[in-house]
Length: 322
Ligand code: NAD
Ligand code: UDP
Image (cartoon, rainbow, N blue to C red; front, side, top):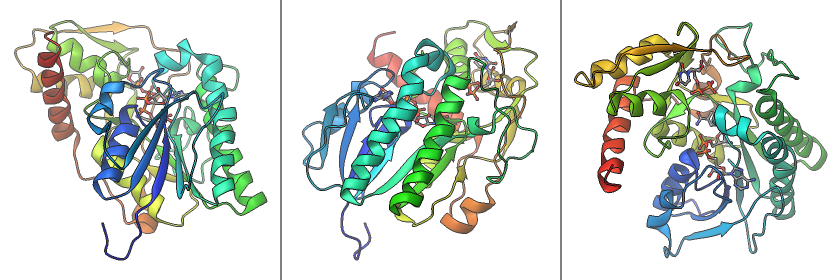
């Protein structure tokens, strides 16, 4: 912690989730206090269990669609609550719409009452199936508003609109981050996203499921890098939106081969399955804004990040006796 900076009291909605729990750890470690609000619909108690009893950590079990019951001073609200994995938001379509709309409104109201900084975890999905490549923040996106993915994409687009409205109407200090595909330890093995699927499949010697022809691209950001980006946004006075992601782009076939290279004795093969509707064909962030305004750049490449994630899965499986 810097000698001049007063410790913050930060509310993190979705703080028991994959990214949220790493953010909680990083803020507590630098001397801030964190109130983690989660309903555990996709998060896990085990992600924050090591902090229970810590003097600078509070856990509030609540559904932010219904209420955001936090008392006392609040310096910042970081709104991470939302299902994020396609199978999860498709399983909870109405909840996903509600958490992006009603949940975001509640989180903004809490920030407004406290004149606290508000940081929104938005997503590269606001660009939909992008016609501009790489994606700059000026690009308005190409989202199908009536397709199944829209429950997530449009909820996040609406949450950005809400945040900007609080800025214009109340001069609330807000910051919007657009998170690109992030992976790492604590991504639930059964989460359904591609990195956890491929790793678990390779560990278990099952075929790696490639959706479509595997030529679609994503740009994968290691979670430690993502958390540094989130904290840089928290500490800044930038409104954004700012892309936070790793600009190195891979096809899903390349990702599968990296996993197979890393676990050579797996015996896994590739199997090709149906491509989900509206699955974006390519995605890569232009991170010029993050570099210029936040001084942020990713440091961990995909090989290294995959290795660290793989090792964490082995530890998790050993602890669970799998
Ligand atoms: P995650 O599913 O692990 O975490 C989401 C957390 O929010 C979970 O702990 C879940 O229980 C909680 N939550 C969901 N609805 C809630 C509600 N109504 N009330 C209280 N808690 C609720 O996913 P993640 O990958 O950690 O994503 C965190 C945030 O970052 C999400 O807002 C997501 O949209 C955004 N994001 C993530 C990625 C990524 O690649 N990981 C990419 C873009 C955006
Ligand atoms: N994908 C895949 N196999 C899987 C899971 C996902 O080929 O087992 C593909 C998916 O179709 C998409 C990419 O991997 O093109 C990234 O999917 P993910 O769900 O991780 O994130 P998102 O679609 O939100 O970018």
